[in-house]
Length: 136
Image (cartoon, rainbow, N blue to C red; front, side, top):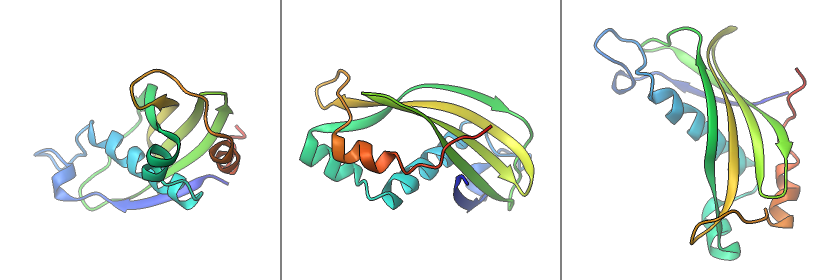
């Protein structure tokens, strides 16, 4: 089962036609990822302070399937892909009920504070193994 993050589309998220502005989907999926890792017990502030590393988006493939509208209740569904030494992959879908509105495949990299990839610390890697897997 995916991780679910529910939110409402507010006026500030939309254009003049009441349709979600395309860049705001990235905000929705970022919030969902942030909530998911917090729920797994990973504080990104503590990750930086304790391990000297941070998570950053390395790449993203996105598709727009339909418009979200002002006052819609939407759900971001997140599932795990590959968990590698210094990165992990996620699939995210923005849904209105059963209707797919937006999808993204996201690669997250663990980085040193000064730049450059770093191995994901073992205690954090263990927590990340609890992200629901993508089975299809």
